[in-house]
Image 1: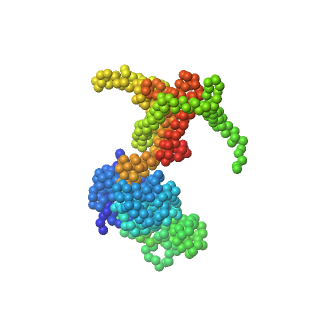
Image 2: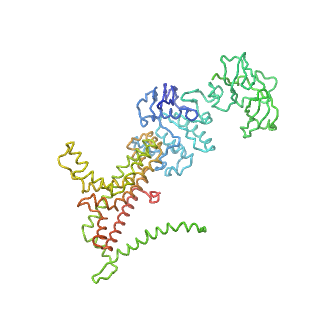
Image 3: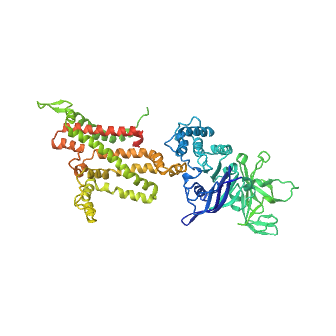
Length: 352
Length: 284
């Protein structure tokens, strides 16, 4: 596949502050690419550099092989859906969507056909004459996306567009966006701090921290094999422990929990265990399992997402354990003793 | 209907007093006065003569039209001059500096119109600051006549009214999200298109309410046309003033006053219609 966007060693500084530092990546044509990171990690700055609103301090970016140096936002084949959508309140839906096409001086007839086509695609037929202030959150969202997509950009940049929606609608829009992207085939670059949005929708996700990419991977790999402790802690839920010592394949946590983790070629500092990696009452026959005795401190009921908060007897470390099969463990009570196992591969150790 | 408490009526008293005593009664008095006419027998009778006299003398007409045109012109000039200032103060520089700068801009209002107008006289007169400066640098030999012309009158009217344009315009611009401008530019709009299609339509209510204030101040001003204006700078308020205080014809003065009220109201009504604005929206 060809690369629609190539970013080469982009750095963006604001005075002494480095917002984006030496970031390099390529985006494949037609992909759904997400940049995931906490607030202030530089993801929005990076997006604004791609759109042309900020000028990179160093580095180069190419769109379809062409350098974008000195090209203003209005001349780039890139459109952006803003965090607050930035719909024009004094125009109706039709005029909002037509705005970009009219700037290209297209004949009125073609503008109308393309706007109608686009509104059909996002399911807003019949809303042409409505004021944008009279629309619901989801509809406004779709107007904003239609307004950009109607220009047939090479890349659509989305800056946390689902942030302002309520949870139910957000879940719905996640699926809708993914399907829309597949249908249209435009490359989406999606910025978010919500890992679930990034994991559900994307083909590739880059996790960003303090202006750098920590890891760029498929959502599955990101979750299963986080490369750094930041990714392990940021993507998905995890139990985090400080490691006190490691020798001869045995590690000890700060509070004194001993676990066997063979063959590490570095001195680990952090240990992560996913809540769903734990096995309750593991049978004796299982191999490569670390076994622990625990006491249940609390049961955190949350439907299919119910968890147990338990204390490891040996060390007083607290862990969260997922309880996916509620029915099987329904009779668990606070204060119960629990035998828990975890596969040695699921003990994720990091140097930093 | 909801039963109102005693406090509700008590709080309404000042408003009603203001409206009735200070606005309704004087207007009604003037209104009736404007139809009173002393006939040949020295008796006061009901008559349209006060209004008719306006149409009979060409000078009144001329003044009336000139006042209207200059007021519209000054309002437009006020917009042209203050828009870049308002834009700069809200969108370009940091908030902490802009509030200080607005404070500086408002200083002339604290001083009072009369004093600022004398200030302009010092600047504009034949041996004033500007002429002196131009002669000193050798650009001109004889002073340019600026004071006591329509030009100096326009400057005076503009200067004392334009600050009232800045405030509503700034609040309109402040509520304009920068991302709207960025979005327009992202969709391929040039700077001129953004100004015309996004910024102006968005700030129209602010411009309209500022425009109404400026227009009303200008059309009803007396000091600037009287002091800074020349022989040809006829202003309708001067005619009204003359009726009341020079010829002591209060009845005709009242009629002229109502004509001015009618003129300003209809121009504002027309302007709102043309720009598609609603008075309630502009007023808020």
